[in-house]
Every structure is written in structure tokens, then in C-alpha cells.
Image (cartoon, rainbow, N blue to C red; front, top):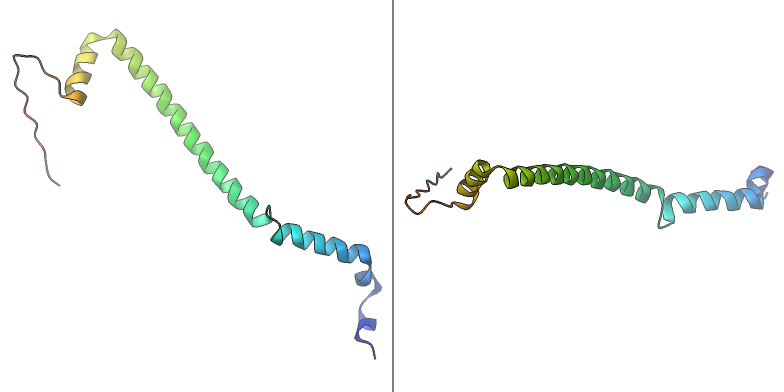
Length: 99
């Protein structure tokens, strides 16, 4: 008794076997398989979120630059706070708090 006689003729068809092999190959073995596509899609979403964040930061920096170039009082405040600049007749004390 041949065990292959119980297999339906459809499953012995060359095109069915090749098609099944091709689908399995493309889903699990190929370099662009299904799991790789999912990982790349997730990475793309993360990179697009970073892009949006940096675009917003760029707009904010350009707005601050424009304000600093037009407002001298704001420029002085910015220089004092960020670069610890002072007038020649002033003394500057820096208080550092430890957590």
C-alpha cells in the first residue's frame, strides 16, 4: 500500500507545491519577510515622530532667534541667564543646589 495514494490529487499538483513553497519563502525566509516589514514599519513611524519633533524645535529656535534679534531687553536677559554675562559693575553669584 503506497501512502501517497491517500493524498488528494490537488496537493500533488506542481503549481500548488511551487505556490505554497513560494508563499512560505516570501513570508518567513526572504530578507524582506513579513516580520522584517513589520519592524521596518515600526521604525519608520518612530523616525517620522522624531522628524516632527525636530521640525517643531526648529520652528521654535527660529522664532526665538527672531525675537532675540529685535528685542534688546530679551537679548540681555538671555545672555545673563544662559551665558552668565554681567555688566562690569556687577558681581555674579552662582548658587548650585545638590539633589
